[in-house]
Image 1 (cartoon, rainbow, N blue to C red):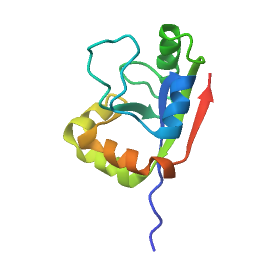
Image 2 (image 1 turned 135 degrees about the vertical axis):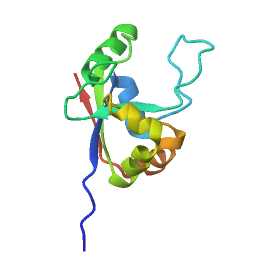
Image 3 (image 1 turned 90 degrees about the vertical axis):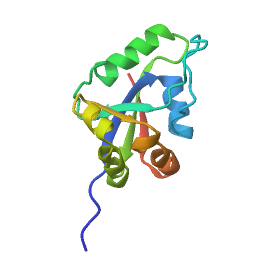
Image 4 (image 1 turned 120 degrees about the vertical axis):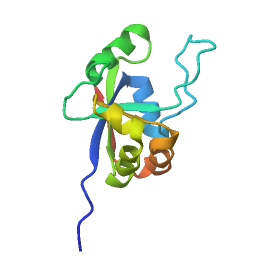
Amino acid sequence: MTPDPSPTILHHGTTLHRALAIEAHGPDPTFREPGTGQLPPAEAFSTVIGDGRPCKTGTPEMVARKKDALFPNEGGPAILEVSVPASIMEIFYSDFFSAGLARSGEIRFEAESGLNELRAEWHNLTKRVIKL
């Protein structure tokens, strides 16, 4: 019997309050940044592979510190780490646009690229919050 492929460790840079909320309830595609008014909701969940590589917006640590600067009452900068099964990553990589974005370092789950599957499995995934 072939063992299951290893999961992918992903990092999401944010504030501590948001990291704890996502850890408990999963990514919320309807989330809106406070004070953004009529701007559209997130509609996706952006991460990077947790090996230290950056994406076009920087490292998760940089993003977390920027979020903290914008929202200083949200507990400080933090990283949400999540272990995503290979089956969900396969769905992600099978989407042409998502796979292309991944080459720049960003793993951005959208409805057509594994977000629904990620949310459905969220409570079964290994996660931790790293306060910076």
